[in-house]
Length: 527
Image (cartoon, rainbow, N blue to C red; front, side):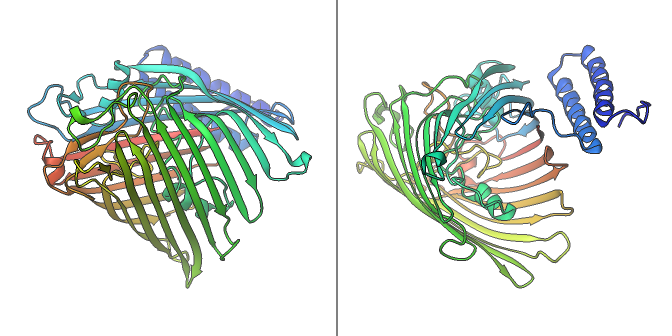
């Protein structure tokens, strides 16, 4: 921290202003001698840590509240990633060992009134030091860095665009308490139609239920949705219905454009926690996914036999449910989760029938040091064992989150079986360590090994890729650890390390290096 010598009779606001001024001058001197993105990012990290500490020390509310109706909301995020990915051999452009930087800033204005709320938010995203030789031919991107370069065709890509702009209409004054209608561009995630306000319960929902089908949190760039959301929220239940189209994002920094050829309709009925059973909530949900982009889908048929989506219909219906319970037991608490989905519809010129299930259980010893929390988790989704029977049986994940269910995203939840153990400990009230041990295998060895984060552009790539399994099913093992430190309600930082041991499926097409490592450190400031 910097030491100041301002008079003691100055107000808290004046003292903070002096501190911020000194910090800013120091940062300006650092930036002046270099324009390297990593130096700028490190400077911003130091600046935000110290500004936030100054706010906290002097009891000053974060800047942003203009008046009782208008508030400015900001976010600053920075990340550095180091990759040492699997490597094919021989191959062109097979650089699997690199680092990259990401910086994201968001600034929004929130208008709140008794009858209508409004919000507009702009986003800056910058991806720096991307590898220009990490898209191996014919294997594709070697880690997310290769995917970013492939989507942006530049080693340094940045853009500013409209992230959100919507109006929230409140109908309580019209005799419909709990009724809301949102229209415009906004963020959305399935499974989080309401929150309980209980940190542990909502944390389970956010980490293990939400964003399996629809998500705005897609790695650094993210995505938004254009359309409407109607909500009827009551003490015992929540009904949500939304009709939306996604924007670009994910890999490309061109996030302003809407993907107009994808139409989505989602509806959910949620029985709130304690409404029917103590400590338990349940949800029924439905999703219709209709894709007419000028692209070719990926499945286990030969490429020449896959019709393009602008000539054939890809229209899928997903129905499903989840149950989540959290109960006190002994000297701690026990939690359990069941989630399932069934799909039907048209996969181009094939019938589509697929499914996915997840079952999880855990116990936390809340009275022991570090409050250890042990969880066992199992997920399985269907694969297609016969490419020639006229029925497509591979589960489709639509538009999910980037890293929520695969922190080292060399795999996804399509045709996948993921059995793993998780240990969570909290050395201090503000720190958390999560250790995961995954065993990954294909549900059907006659299907492909799929990867990808879903559609991220209006045309071109389908959004998912698939590689032949060679008749094998063992994808491998993943061991990862993440450390999160929440300094206060505004500022947090995180460290992650993951190591993947490639199984027979991975070794089938990555002969040069059969294991992978990823390390990242990031911070998030919200004010």
